[in-house]
Amino acid sequence: MALRPTRNDLGENAKKVSITVLNGTLVDMIDLTNAVRMAHWTLRGPNFIGLHEMLETFYNDLFATGDEVAERLVQLGGTPDGTSQLVAEKSRLTPYSQSTVYTLDHVRELADRFSNLAKSVREGIDSTDDSGDADTADLLTGVSRDLDKKLWMLESHLDK
Ligand SMILES: [Fe+2]
Picture (tube, protein in one colour):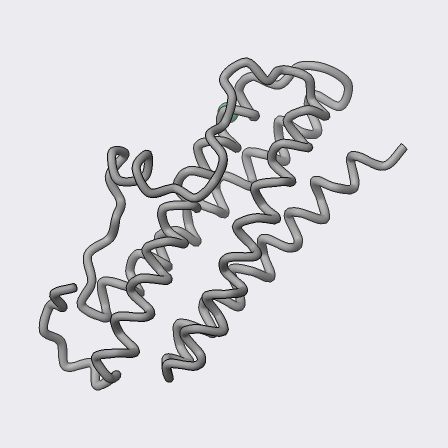
């Protein structure tokens, strides 16, 4: 991995670890943002308006957080995997189905993906902390806390 020169004094290894972790997070977040938007557009069934409006806040939050993630990796000398082609190639999330319609089916599908992303972000907290980049670990800690909150909001729809 070639790093762009910067006065940021973090060690080269720590930068490389963080850029790799942040790019993986960015790609998954863009993929999840699009999945949430698909659900916002296509869901039908009980609780439509509540879910439709909740998901709008979700994709706006994901978009803003993804921006923070991308800008952190640029600050460290990296290049974001931010194009549609790279996201399609590199996302670790299961592809979102175009044919999902029923509200609670969307909630289950999204809950799976929020859980998967939160898990990999937590792994990223540990690896960036171990390599000595406390700032990226701190950023990712905020990201995972927000993903956990959204997972709770999704799962709360699934109780009988
Ligand atoms: Fe909308």
